[in-house]
Length: 74
Image 1 (cartoon, rainbow, N blue to C red):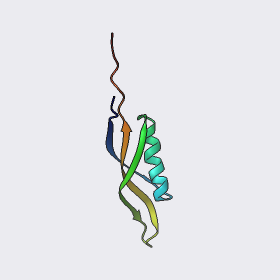
Image 2 (cartoon, rainbow, N blue to C red; image 1 turned 45 degrees about the horizontal axis):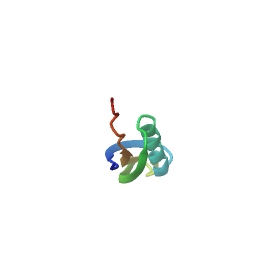
Image 3 (cartoon, helix red, strand yellow; image 1 turned 45 degrees about the vertical axis):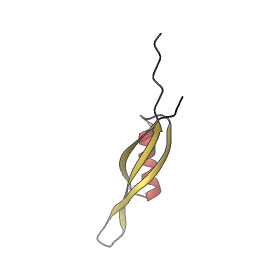
Image 4 (tube, rainbow, N blue to C red; image 1 turned 90 degrees about the vertical axis):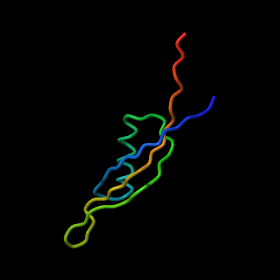
């Protein structure tokens, strides 16, 4: 039996840090996806106020998770 995975791309943001943005995306993904195995940061960005202070941090992640084996009906 082989192991099959699927990778999806998700984006999200947080006000405090890049790490918080990553945690936010992963937590939201984990609420509907089981067996998340790893992630890769694809893109990092954000927005700043008029004085150049960051106000939002955004990330795009590739998230890989296991695909369940099909159910055998007998």
